[in-house]
Image (cartoon, rainbow, N blue to C red; front, side, top):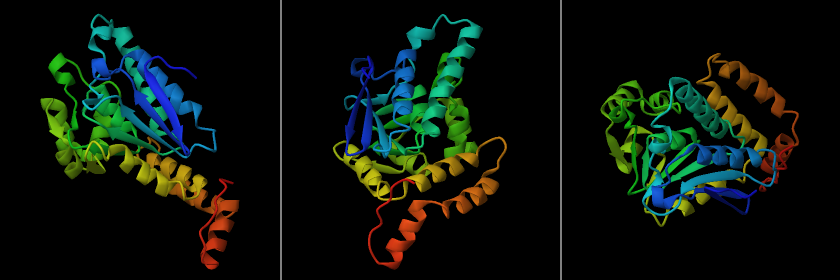
Length: 259
């Protein structure tokens, strides 16, 4: 499928989605967000796709925020609609069956930070900066930033960042648990691919379950414990479990089929 604001490529089962608005620091207008959602959804049932990398074009920005000019004259109802649509995009990423890594190559501010937080992991280049500066516009984050930032860094620090609008660098983000790894810009995509190459050797159904159960911890019904018991038992009926056990006993590498 051809997109206007993003680029997609598939390299050995890893789909890279690149926000392609470098002249605007990859600002997230509504169309761009919808294209990201479409690109993520398009690969969910494709067994040949085993991971997704989400990044921005150029070296300055992952995504420097929402496109402010686009919503400057919105009504209350339009604001609610914009936030709801944004939540749907972020939820599509967070609930992806395929592991999604944000390769944060510069500014990840406002909606860009929220986009990165929706991914399962974040790898940042040394020049990356994270922040939720919406209070400077008389606004709050609208794409679940008030929720995911608390989950990732804790309530106290999240409230500080949300209320001051301050940005933090990549190393502070890592110390807070917002970022998994900090590397040079040149090492950014190779590091993401390295992680996914390791994940690609594991049982696909198990990876899907791990993502779903980790998300269950934050769900309203908090049924993660019960769901883990159910999923654990179900795996005893899969071909991948039988292959994994056989490979272990035979001292060889497993060949998982996702069945």
